[in-house]
Length: 124
Image (cartoon, rainbow, N blue to C red; front, side, top):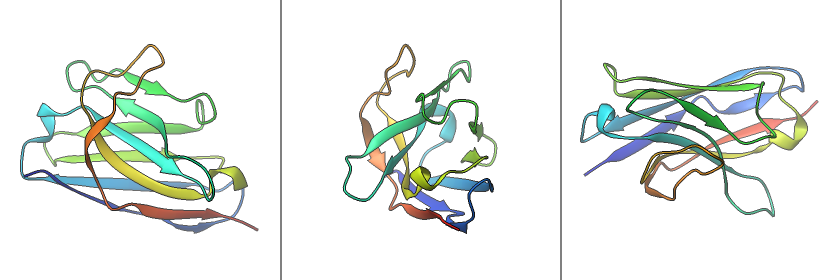
């Protein structure tokens, strides 16, 4: 059974940076497309970044493009989300997940596995 555990959330001022980590256990990470989702207060959960496992191509939602970077280390069974130039509107619970299918062309497939989430609060 796949288990995902996020870490790295916390409080940060606007303009600051955070790096989220996701550890996958149960199966080799190389078998999975990896994605990051977030849910802001009062809003629906949205996919913001995705990295494929075949060619490590990436996809970003427009609001984070140029500020966030998703990466993966299959040898360590870990995925990451580097978040720079954070804004108050980035405040949310961030989830690591395994989309069931290749991401791209504006699509992050619905995940079949989720982490428990890590909270990011961007505030001055």
